[in-house]
Amino acid sequence: MRKINFMKVILIIVVFIVGAMLITILGQATGHTKGGGPIGIVITVGIFAAARAIWRYNPESEQTKDTTADKQSLDKNS
Image 1 (tube, rainbow, N blue to C red):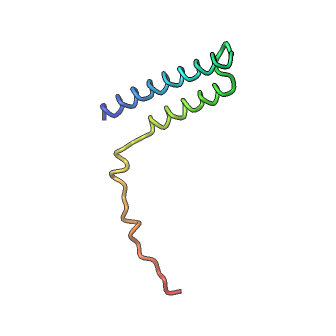
Image 2: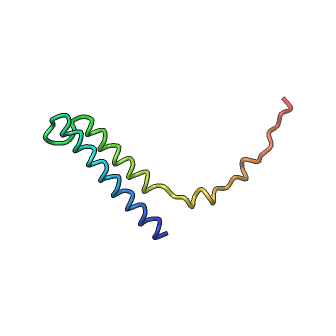
Image 3: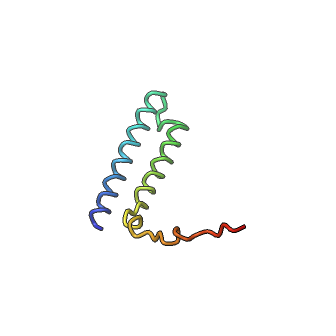
């Protein structure tokens, strides 16, 4: 469990670094002095959404998923 949390933290740090680089490059290309303008805001929201998705990912829940309810037979006599 500790290994998974450690990897999540590393991935989130990588996402923030890549996002910051994108915003910096965009800001310099468009001539904005602070951030990348409106597109920079969209990238920032995407960074936070990616961090949230990485943190919520839980591979153990996929393995313990109960699929017995999917094997119910349907009544087709109508």
